[in-house]
Image (cartoon, rainbow, N blue to C red):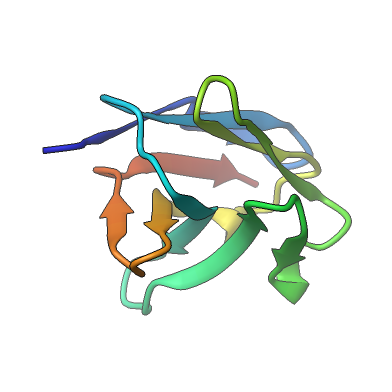
Amino acid sequence: QVQLVESGGGLVQAGGSLRLSCAPSRRIFNMKSMGWYRQAPGKQRELVAVISNYGSTNYADSVKGRFTISRDNAKNTVYLQMNSLKPEDTAVYYCNMKDWNDFNYWGQGTQVTVSS
């Protein structure tokens, strides 16, 4: 069974930056999209950013201009560069990969905490 392995979370002060990475334990073929979601305490999981197989991107309004999603197809890896972090960005961030059968793979989550 494929597992998504995330890294890069941690504690940072407001205004700081973090970079998240996510790679599968083995290559996923017929990949459709890669993305990042987050879930803050007491809130529903929400989409942060997604990148399609063709490279098109979509961002939540709350992170536009601050976060950048990218992918390395050769490494089957997705990244999330987070700049100008705010306390409201504090959440568990989950990596997601979807194939053309619309099967979803999820990471275990990585904590991002932004202090004020």
